[in-house]
Amino acid sequence: MNDYTAKVLSGLKARNAHESEFLQAATEILDSLAPVFEKHPEYEQTSLLERFVEPERVVMFRVPWVDGAGKTQVNRAYRVQYSSAIGPYKGGLRLHPSVNLSILKFLGLEQTLKNSLTGLPIGGGKGGCDFDPKGKTDTEVMSFCQSMMTELYRHIGQNIDVPAGDIGTGAREIGYLYGQFKRITGSYEGVLTGKGLTYGGSLARTQATGYGLCYFVKNMIEANGKTIQGKTAVVSGSGNVAIYAHEKITQMGAKVVAMSDSLGYIYDPNGIDLDVMKQLKEVERGRIKDYAKRVAGSEYHEGCGEIWTIKCDIALPCATQNELNLSSAKLLVANGCFAVGEGANMPTTLEATELFLASGVLFAPGKAANAGGVATSALEMSQNSLRMSWSFEEVDEKLMGIMKDIFEKCADAAKNYSDNPTNYVVGANIAGFLKVAEAMMAQGAV
Ligand code: NDP
Image (cartoon, rainbow, N blue to C red; front, side):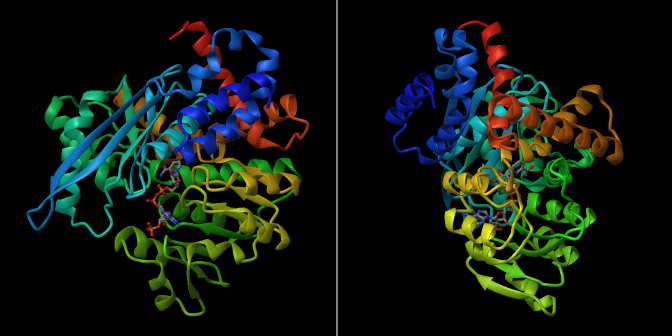
């Protein structure tokens, strides 16, 4: 870190002392950016970094809704509009009891760099609510979504801010949110992505984050003279990202032997049966422990964090932030894991990331490796504007090209700015930042 980045980080810590996730993400990013400011002293002159780390706007609002028993419930929602330097704000809506401003600011900051890396014209944003869709009826989820959109619609639009799914926000929630936006505004526009295929959604959006992760990981592994074929993989989580990461890495020749949910994990030495997992998680919205009742030879263990005790060559954390800590990283390294790809946002703690880099483990940071989801969301926006639908193969082909391009950008920036050419953390942060910085410089002190 140089004097300028250290000064900005210390100001950030003083003003946001209680926002631990936000400070964690900012520390990792600012730590990487020091060489950029040595090359570009004009950025400090214009307080570019101070502006970059501060969201352009944060909206916070209450969401009252009536539950199945007729009682009024109240939740707290946010939309963090982080950066519109290179396009309209774009980023998911998270529905989970843990949602707070710190988590959404960390996600918004990461999203800004991620969206820049895609090469597409999208700014960064993130939103969400401390509502838990788990265990709620469809009617309750609809009541909540309609109430949330009744405030949110004022702040979004196809050229302003385009939210999408995230943890807890899947096709059902996007459908209810979209219906309410249309009802209030009377406007049929691509204001949300992740829509159903009958009303403007894109083929391959459901698969995009998990598939894109595997495309990035394949590029990374092959660029370093290794291969996925015949390797063992562990994928944490069993939601949207995890399921399609499993599907693609298996197609690439690996065997996935463990998956998890927030309560525990399944170990299946014969390879997790994805059809059973999809039925359980996508259709029945059930718990992963039931997998062991359906598939002979598999075992269920309580405690999702223990999944990293399972020996593997490739680890794909696809559940949530800070799910892979230093002691898990030590175990993975000791067990011979040679590649880690972050499907989730910031699933690896700072200390664990440092250990992977120091141990020569190939490490694909989430803001690059999981960018396939938002990239395909941007392709959904393009199709909506064109009033066209592309085939699954067309979208998948574009996704593959985008992920290859992101990997190459990260590798080039790592080579040019770091003494370790495989430090894709530095590579992703710098490559993502440079485009945003150039646009900010061109637009003046805004
Ligand atoms: P889902 O809601 O579909 O799935 C989340 C999964 O993670 C579930 O298996 C859930 O288990 C588990 N999980 C949630 N919280 C915890 C926790 N505290 N500890 C352990 N496991 C947990 O979400 P997604 O698959 O969409 O998102 C997963 C991650 O990927 C998030 O970090 C998200 O921000 C990121 N991401 C998602 C994108 C997308 O397109 N969906 C795009 C880019 C990033 P349970 O069912 O028990 O809650």
